[in-house]
Length: 487
Ligand code: BG6
Image 1 (tube, helix red, strand yellow):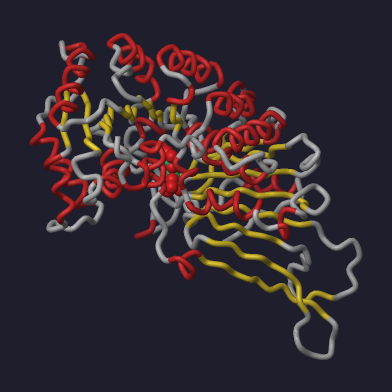
Image 2 (spheres, helix red, strand yellow; image 1 turned 30 degrees about the vertical axis):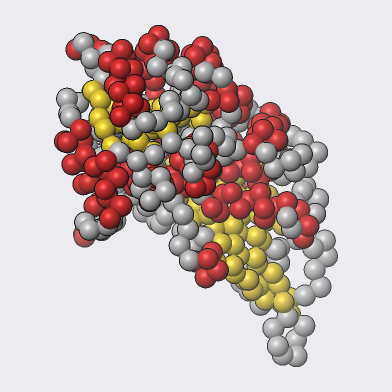
């Protein structure tokens, strides 16, 4: 078969959950960017699947609406993709439209578009519906077509270690691990991928990236937004399952891992798993959970979590989580890794701060109030993607004093706008490259780290919307020699 541009061949891309929020906000705009140009149009054929009783025409209308919302112009010629290569199939076994009908439709669409039978199944579905879908796909043999077959599962993968193990068992009943793409969209971000190049292509940093030179590492994923109409999902998840166990833990593995033997998917994932295996389970004494309460005033007043639409009365769901992790290996023994994430914090910012040790003896007076004199590398994952290195220098004048200065690198200045993470990941799924996806043993190892917090969650601390989280989180950081960074 002729390989098309970027190594993507003709195939059917099936999305289950095709009427949901993820599909319309993230997947469709990204699928459009990857599939709608001349070389792939008609070749990447989308089959949307959901319970709703729609036909191709009505589904295509909703696709056009999503593209408009994503900023695609009404006269963009690539919009033809939505009319030529997008189809819809209802799946509602309880009402007699089951997996056999889905298989028949898949075969029909493949015939009409002369596709070779290569298939992606993207499950954009709540985690508690996945088991039934996997069983249905497996029983109907939908997954075993004439060509290759890949299955994509969104995070969170399970609710805890036991459910993740069970989900892995269900997946492996019908699919080999090399067919499974567990998605964590943080891994598709350019700045996250850059962590590997930054670390392993620069001797400058790699040679000081260890317990001898690093005092502590801070990882922050702060969001100013609240629930955004996602209470049904979020109230049953909370910050640990929504962010800490996946996005933040992935960032941590990339910061802490050893150099892989090769740049291939499994070599890199092997090293990430080793980091997770070296982390002791997090003690509830080393974690703080919080929940936002009303904050601001007048025009900027924001309601508290318990007053959000769809949140269960008296809900104990954490909208903030901070934890200290210890990596018990030769490189990191004794270096605290402080992680925090929260909704309704002052601004959106994802950053990794590596605080280096201070010089053993200090001869110079500091002109700065903070008197830190410790080098600090701040990797800005988003927004303002780039990094910043803080170092000391002598300001001009008679006195031999020091001042802290910051050196910047900004992606926007060097490269312009960055590609959306979902576009990168969808392209990799279509190409069959698993490097940026989470392996089965990896996801289980990540759950194992947080098992004690799931078994006995720390008490919820309230924090006013628009603030940096509960005071206890600042105390946790201070106990470990860290003052949470500000922007
Ligand atoms: C999602 C979470 O995975 O990531 C959301 O479910 C969160 O709650 C989002 O808001 C953050 O992603 P990003 O790319 O905007 O940092």
